[in-house]
Length: 87
Length: 387
Image (cartoon, rainbow over all chains, first blue to last red; front, side):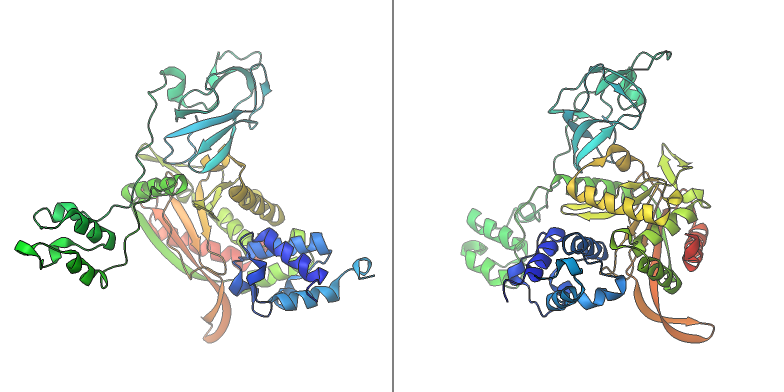
């Protein structure tokens, strides 16, 4: 569970766009925006990083489904491109 | 040394990126210069061949000093021109090095002056200073009315929190302080504000973005910048520079875009923002934000803005009354876009609304025109497909 590769990749992308983020202090069930300073520009950069790293193009209409880390992991698990699915 | 901001006094040449004999074209980056706003890529303003590098690396020189001489390309008669053609630099000998003004300090309350006749030991005075306690307000309980350590400690608990030890402001803070102080000293600001309903704009943008890949998506900020840039074409008295006692309108619209950076704030230019399609404008904004935070801003981007837009974003306050960045004459501030009650045609609804505020220089324009300008922006945002 703790070695979930999607979660790990997601945290890394978050640190990429918000370097002051301390992943160990994030509450996975709380809204990210309350814990990480992400303005709309930073959030878009995060979406672009997710696209680069995980190959998922999250439409704007789905942004609200990534409000917590747990939600984001679940969402991305369901949207990973077929080739990137677990063996 | 080019002037890269209203209150830049000097700059440090860090590195030459050209050498004598190099052919350069207008816009080429020729040197890296360290300023209060970080390291800036200095561009050359005309074509030619580098003749001589006058200022060696790691040298701090005043604004206007000759950095290098340039030989025009064949056929032109001018013998030499400074890299940055500041008129004073070409003819007059370089002025003596100008020392940066002493860093402003947080001034401790003038305890010593006010308490000259208060009896207190040096240790007690220091304690009072540390706790922000004015000795003159105390009744000394010591010998001959002397203020004691206990007297200070008794009130210190209730006094303001200890003042911070005097800290020298860093370069960026100093640059902001100088420019903003000059603005408030010299520019007679007036302010007008309007609430703008942006439902149509956001719906249109959401529809556009739904068709776009994540890397091509446009944020509302780009829409707002475009609306300002287009609107100001018809309000030349808000777009340009007030220098030497006169306003000089600019035919080009270079929007200074305020970006929060680690040490403060910087507002580099989005060149010709009125002529860029939205996706290009968004890319330009993203590129500016990246370079403002990571380094690599160009000299023209610091020197060129003809008016400034400050956009607080969705986590900002409802409205912002800006301080004009001299020698510009206007700054347009957008608060956060938020749902608010909105009355229209006798009906009350809930709509996304943004408050647009204009701070403008009364020497160049009047509030009536400023208000018309805001109305024009609102009109453009109501027809987003035309942006």
